Figure (cartoon, rainbow, N blue to C red):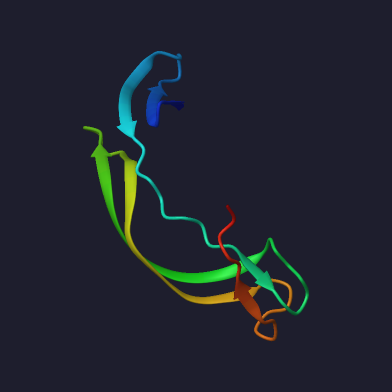
Length: 100
């Protein structure tokens, strides 16, 4: 996969190295990433996040029935719970303000 001017170029190759499939796929902008901090232990890197997502995906099937998901757009996302991996349910996790 190559990225040029916000567009991904995907080239699938067979076992001999010949190009089987070549596609240009526009990148879909993803929502900003929410970062978290555990106020109990100070963890900034490991969290168990339970979320529900509503997505739209482009599915490409080969004649042989193999599926490739070429792009996925997140239409809605609801974070239901965030837990510190190290502290578990006893930890107090807070969202961090977006960094500039």
